[in-house]
Image 1 (tube, each protein chain N blue to C red):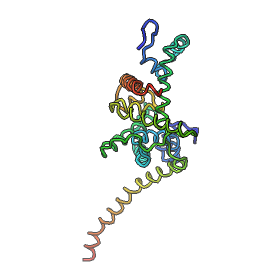
Image 2 (image 1 turned 60 degrees about the vertical axis):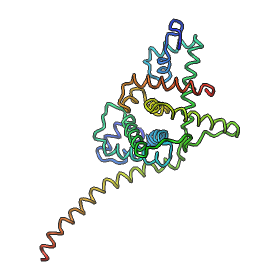
Image 3 (image 1 turned 45 degrees about the vertical axis):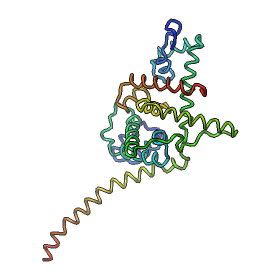
Image 4 (image 1 turned 90 degrees about the vertical axis):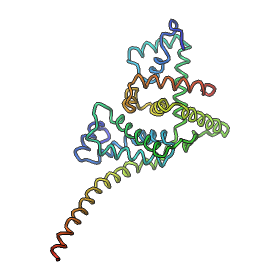
Length: 178
Length: 106
C-alpha cells in the first residue's frame, strides 16, 4: 500500500477502505504537524490542529479538487484551522515559543544557536501577516509558489513578491548571523 | 540590487532559482551565469543560508513515539464521528416511540 499514489489511496478511501486513508495520514503527518507547529508554536495546539486537519479532510474527501496535489489541499485545511485557532484565542505568539532550539555539544555554541533561533523567529513574527504566512508555508519547501498561492488564494506572482519583500526584510535584520 | 548589464538576473529570479520556481531552460542559464559571477553566487548563497537558518529555527519536532500513534488517533476520531450521528439517530428513534408506547399504555 505504501507504493500507491495519493490518487489511488484517495480512490480506495472513497470506496470504503480506511486503511488507505491511514496510509495517507502516515505519509503527510510530519509535514502537517510541522506546519501547525510553526503556525501555533505549541505542541498540544499543533497536535489538535493536525489531527483535525486529517479528520476534516477525510469527511470532505468527496469535494477534493484533483487539480491540486493532495498535500496542497491538506495544507490549506490545516492552515485555515491554525488561523481560526489564532483568531479565536487572539493569540500573540510569544517569541521563542515551545520549539526546542537545535542542540549542540558545546554550551557556548548551543547558547549562540538558541540566541540566533530566537532572533530569527522574532524577526519572522515582526513581518506583516501576509509575508509571515508565506515564509512559514515555504520553510520546509514542500509547497511551490503555485501551491502556496492555492493555500492562500493569491496568485503565484503575489507569493513571489511577498516572499521577496520578506526575505529582504529578514536579510536586513539578520545579516550579521547569515 | 544588481547592475542589469553585468547581472541579467534580478533578485526575484535568483530567489525563484533557489526555490525551484524557474523553468528548466532558464534555470540552466542562471546556473551557467553563477559559474562566472561571484556577486550573484553570493546572493544565492545568502538566500539559501536564510532558508537553512529559518528551517533550523523551526526544527522543533515531536518525539518519534508521537508519530507512531498519530494515524491511529486520527482513525479513532474519524470512527467516533462516524458513529456519533448514528447514535444520535438511534436515540431519536427510541424517543419517537415514547408517545406511541404511552398511548398504548393509556
